[in-house]
Amino acid sequence: MAKVTFLGGINEIGGNCFLVEDKGTRLLLDFGMRYPLRGKYFEEYLKPRTASGILDVLTLGLIPSRLELYRADLLRMMGTQVPSQPYLDGVLLSHIHYDHSANISYLDERVPVYSSEITRAYAKALMETGKRSIETEVYNFKPRPLLNMRTAPILRTFKSFDLGAEFEVGSITVQSFPVDHSVAGATAYLLECSDTSLLYTGDLRLHGPYGLQTRQSLDKLGREAPDLLLCEGTRINDYETSSEEGVKSNALEVASKCNQLIIADFAPRDVFRFSTFHEIAKQLDRRLLITKQDAYLIRELRNIEQLRSVLPPIDDESLLVYVDRKDTGTYRSADYDTWEREFLTMSSAVRANYIHQNQSEIIACMSFFDINELIDIKPREGSIYIESVSEPHNEEQEIDVERLNNWLDFFGLRKFHFHSSGHANATDLQFIVQNVKAKQLIPIHTEHPSLFNDIHDDVNIVRLGETITATG
Image (cartoon, rainbow, N blue to C red; front, side, top):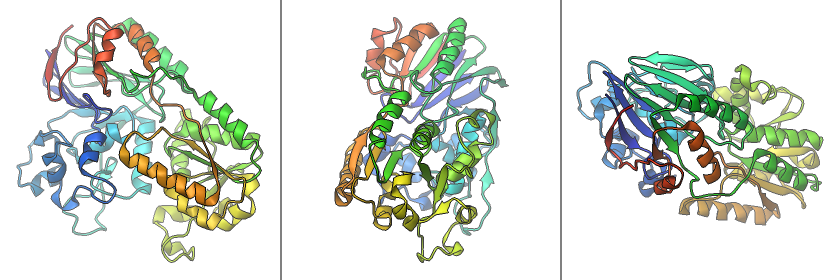
């Protein structure tokens, strides 16, 4: 009989990690960082010690205590014997957000990661353009202890698939269903085990650009009528409605009244929000300024057919690529990482002085972490800052908002806030649950699991670490 063990994502938002076992086959549904718990112990300048391998995160309960899940090099650092065979047959990764993917960094390198091709491309781009740490090695990793920084990374096995693909892992048949989220490539999974079926939603919404695709997936899943539904409930207590079209119309209205620089702040991996501001820029006859990281990600994602209609080529005349000052401040090639250098000589590459001189012709995609670039850019009076990210949900983020506001006040930038969540609200969650027609529902990725009792007749509120037997 199939069993499910809840190793994360219970009574918390994020940290999804669910072990499914059936006739000797073991699969993890996601392997995400437990952000709320991590925030109790760590912050920007206090991080898990790389020299300790997994000891810090294991001791504090940030990762499951099952040592058989982890990389050989990290087990050796703890003096623990490495299993002769991998414990898992695979990880089904729903999307790239770190609260679903980050703990793959510690995963036994022999375990394949199944994901959409879009999610694999995200993982590659984030690894190659970000700062390597033991917490961010999802796509590849360097064995610890790292005695030579030039050691080549070990590539993980990503078994990527086209959206909607079906495949088998041991005794389990897996059907993938594309769903809309604030990151492209998000996937729900239907697992057909030997005597039961289980649907895992991952994160999803109905109000985004691919909302119709999500509804089509729900129609198919309703015909399957799974025995067990693991349903995300981030916004089960929230009835507020918003949409990407709403963000676009509101942002366009204020942007059209601005005759100076417009700064757009949104999540760097949200290509749908990027597309929104790209369309706004074109309508206002402005060019969209992006970072080198943005340019690299767009180039990678455009290799995937489904996203070519969403993303322009990076050499499109509607785009500019921002070259910031690094290291010596002289813009010499040696100041930049290898992956950045190709963007330095593009015809669309610009520096701060160009932006200052052409403020009325640009929408600049910049976040809080780019805010000090304003010292070089020198925005003129009348410039605006359109914030298009979620509201702060912890004290640390509230402090960041206060710092951001201080910067905006210093430069005299008026701030506007328009956002659309990546998660279904309570009304849409009810629609999802009613259309799936599952026999039993287990709330995940939520701080309010009991509210699901209002929308399903058989809700099982499990505890962290609990194992249940799933029956048909």
